[in-house]
Length: 91
Image 1 (cartoon, rainbow, N blue to C red):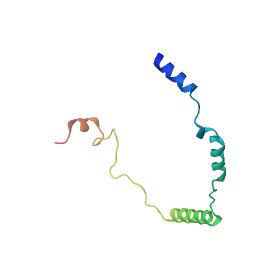
Image 2: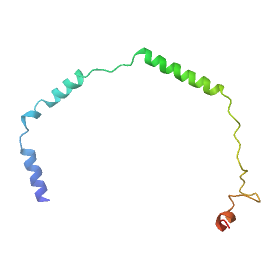
Image 3: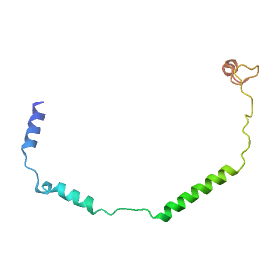
């Protein structure tokens, strides 16, 4: 650990490079100069209209009634989920 402590002490005593002197001011100036992106009102209106149309069309199309293809009952006589059928395997 003495080597690490000595290296950190030397690093702390080393003078900073001149390029680091005003780095905070340069970073803040670049942030302030960055252009601001703005969305126009037309894009927002088109998106809202598209969402409304999709919602109305989706709600208006009649859906088929959902039904199970095979009745599943864990306690029924011919249940594919019964442990006995899962353990025996297929003949």
